[in-house]
Length: 258
Image (cartoon, rainbow, N blue to C red; front, side, top):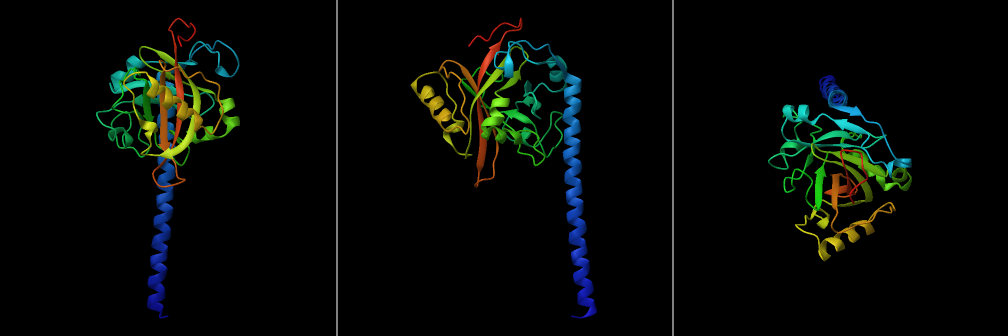
C-alpha cells in the first residue's frame, strides 16, 4: 500500500473517530441539559406537601407535592397536569397539543428538544375525564422521561413503587398501578372507550392479565384509568406500557372517591 493511500485511510479513520467522539459528547451534553431543564422546572413550580397516610403510599390521602398551575399555564396554556412518582425520575409537566407530534419533539416552551415532553393523546379530554387517558413519553438512554416505566416489569420494583401521582389544576389523583407489559405500537391496548360497559370491563381484565407484576387493585368499570406509553426495543415497533387507576383526592385531603 502506497504512502498516499495509507495517509488517506488514516485521515478517513481520524475523521470518523473525531465525528463519533463529537456526537457522543454532544449527546451527553443534551442529556445533561435536559436533566437541568426539568430540575429547574420542578424547583420553580412544585413544592413538597405534608404527607398523610400509611406505608408505601397506598393509603396516602394527599399528594406529596403541590403544583403552581397558574404560573405553569401562564408559561404555556397547553399544560394539563403534572406527573410524579416518589423515588424516581418521573417528575414532569403534562402537555396536550393540537396533534400527537408536536410535543414529541418540543419542550414546554415550544423549542425543539430531543427528549420532547410528556404529552396526552389529543383524542383525550384535557381534564382526564375519559375512561382511559393515554400519556406518551420518550425512552431516553439516560432513563429520563418515560424510559424508567420498564422498571415496573420487576415485581420488587413495583412493590416499592406501587403508586404515582397526577395533579391537575382542578383535581389531584393517586395512580394505583395495576399492569405493565410490552406490546406492539398498533395494539388494542391504545383503544379509547366512550362509556363504561361490558367491553370496557373485558378490556380492563385483559390488560391486567398481561402484566409483568402482580397487583391487588380493584378494577371498577366506572372508574377512570391512565395508560403510560414509551418505546421498547425487544422487537420492531415495540412499546412498554403501564396502566394505573385514577383515585381522586379531594382538595381538603379527604379519602379517594373511588
